[in-house]
Amino acid sequence: MQDCSNSMVIVLITPPPVDEEGRERFARSLYGQDARKLPERTNEMAGVYAGYCVELAREMHIPCINIWSKMQETEGWQKLYLSDGLHLTPEGNAVVHKEVVETLRNAGLKAEHMPYDFPHHSKIDGSCPEKAFQ
Image (cartoon, rainbow, N blue to C red):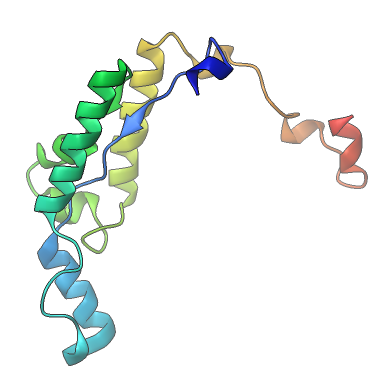
């Protein structure tokens, strides 16, 4: 992919951690007694996947954001960053956003200096949107 563009920055992002107790609570809230006894995902396996992601990025000499490790640095990460033990809360998304912006800035990319691929929404006429793309 890097051969497609000299300015392309490829960044790998690990999966977030998994709060197995949170997953169990969420499953019970949906399925009651029919909920699985064993979690469908584990933090241990998410960590294995994250490790391979970090290793691949190192081998390819590309940046990697280790969200799995980063989030677990914060006490109470389970409820702060994960809504159901798996999916990110607004605070969890803020961590990812901060890390992505920092990684792109370190690569020399700043949003305020990047060109638009498409017209800005304020330049699109709702009655004839195709004009903006000609």
